[in-house]
Image 1 (cartoon, rainbow, N blue to C red):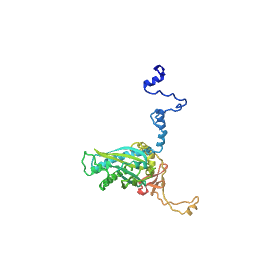
Image 2 (cartoon, one colour):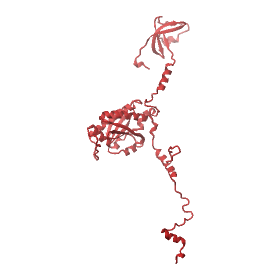
Image 3 (cartoon, rainbow, N blue to C red):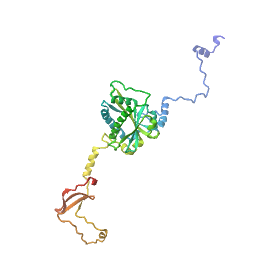
Length: 353
């Protein structure tokens, strides 16, 4: 068969070296459509509106629905900022070295997820908030442990802390970390003091996360990551506070306090003082008091006279709401009956309102 007898379609196939595409059967693939990038983002929940705000939708909304936002307790940011400043000073005095403490992140996490994410080896310190009647957790990573030991025991500067894997922490290392945690707990007490007096007491030191279970795995907690740098050494310390621990002072933590005065507003204080000074009170001038039986009071009739044991020069007591305040003399000023104040009645501290 000559070349003229070969169809043109087969000649093109042999020239290109590839078989020609088979014609699509009617009805095959007509209903199938590939999603574009916008549709994929919408399905996964990564839509961004015109204002640049991320929308909660798709699979991402399902995942985020299990999280708890710490922004419900805005006062925690001020408390932890104060804690960072206090820790910077106290750890400098503790280590006699240049220490810088920084706040890396504040987030919400499930307690079980956090225990599974702790990088081992590490030291876990369980402490108790006595006034809140619950517990918290400090996690000190290995880099910070060896750095603290190196600094406190006189290690050389300019060299990274030695990290020995595969062995438990010694008694000296655990003791030094315990002392550092006690210093941090004192700073936490001072940080919470303007909100509510809370005393934090170290309960125990653990190296196995299973023995540091202070809440149920599904319970929500606040995770605060702090970075401690000592020149060329340092590490991270993490603070975990379950929501159950903060529940007694939740009403204080949800308030929106501006600045660092923990609720003190000079404008409001001035307005309150002005209103208090202009408040009207009723003052009673008591000439005399007598003790009478109920029978005598019930038998009083119109026209009877009650004799008071008070002379013209006797002292008159001024009271407000039954509380004795001043003493003076009864007299007259023009057409008015007046009392001249002579002295103030001193009261015990137990009687103060």
